[in-house]
Image 1 (cartoon, rainbow, N blue to C red):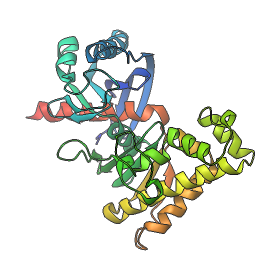
Image 2 (cartoon, rainbow, N blue to C red):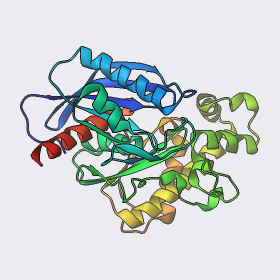
Image 3 (spheres, rainbow, N blue to C red):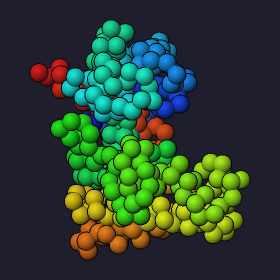
Image 4 (cartoon, helix red, strand yellow):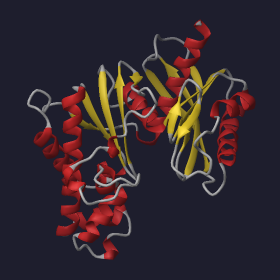
Length: 320
């Protein structure tokens, strides 16, 4: 997506997380990008959509005050995003009134700079594809496993958004291992209910792991590292189910590379091995050898993706 060398293009990007808002100045020069001057503040989840947007613009404003020649502002946000209308069309009830939020109008009124917004998983995947583990590849499937399970398909530097902006919901694909488990969306049998971070903790408890080892992800990972059979089995089952879904997606998408992101990826080597086994179980021979790698841009990936998306959107609009 970014083209050419020369002077860096400065974009202020903001990543709206479930507990924290992060804004930064992203400098993009050709195929290189740096993230500087990161500011953060708590996400006011007990407030309304307006409260959240006010906090986002405040964080962006702090960065803008310290940087000149900023050409655009980009945002990564949860929910289904209409990137043309720059608004949220569907969302959970985590933020009151988030569905329908007119994000673009808020930022236009606040700063008067070219502004673009895209789904946070799409932004994460785009940042990783352009500046991380997907760099040099034409196509990439990113799967992020943490509090939930999200995903993105990036084709030639462009996120596949889908007609309604809902593409990439990897966690809401059915898998046999989750047959009797309720998903966060209310359906039964989706991957996320079993194999997300909270899903793995619930699975471990059902397998008899003591409550003292199921406080959070790190305590469960430590139990698995000590050889706790139940903890090990929880990571194996969750990883295998995740791999099965990825294998099915490879049969459909045939991408160059799969990038795995999120806190669960580093929790246990057993999980990664099980993912690979699950892929081999479901993937056709022709795609079974697709490289599967760990993401490398971490918490900066969504900021990088939002910045690159805003930069391209601004160029496209200026040429119309």
